[in-house]
Length: 205
Ligand SMILES: [Zn+2]
Picture 1 (tube, rainbow, N blue to C red):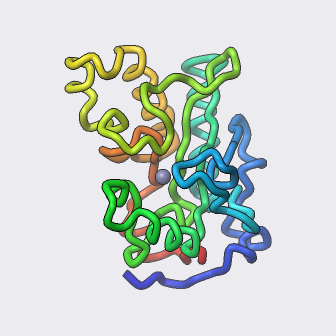
Picture 2 (tube, rainbow, N blue to C red):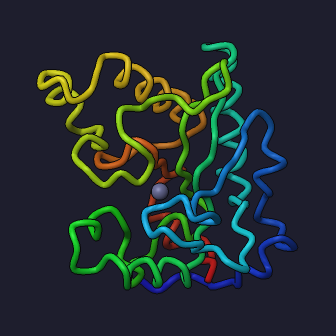
């Protein structure tokens, strides 16, 4: 699908539709693609500032963090990926196309909701300050990461009730902020309707 409009990632910080993650109250961030600590083992965001979301998604994330603090005092959200420029989506696609990892990434021809600043990858931080054990890691592209298979994984013992309870807690917090999860990644959430996002918002290249 052709985007409604395109803007450059370099222009995001001065664009009124976007908000910095640093300004989202109650949320910390550690962008894995800005480090070597990711599936590719290299810095995918070299030279790009990707610590941004569209204002609608940023407001939803703030609401999710507020819900979490009320329901589970001491627990926090940590953003692992947010705005992902189309240029980076294309580089990732070149790495994964033709491999089993391809199912975990959007074909850049269609476009990732991350490239609109309307998707976020996020995990829970416990009151003790560490990332919660969710039963599989961020970007662990395996069936253990699929929320659609939780009942099966509980039955087989691949996930513990505690793992699933924490994933449900994350999903409930994000739902309170207007985010929907997906069947294949416990960490990924879209804000609002994906087709509407692709139709009406500018894509960040
Ligand atoms: Zn994602």
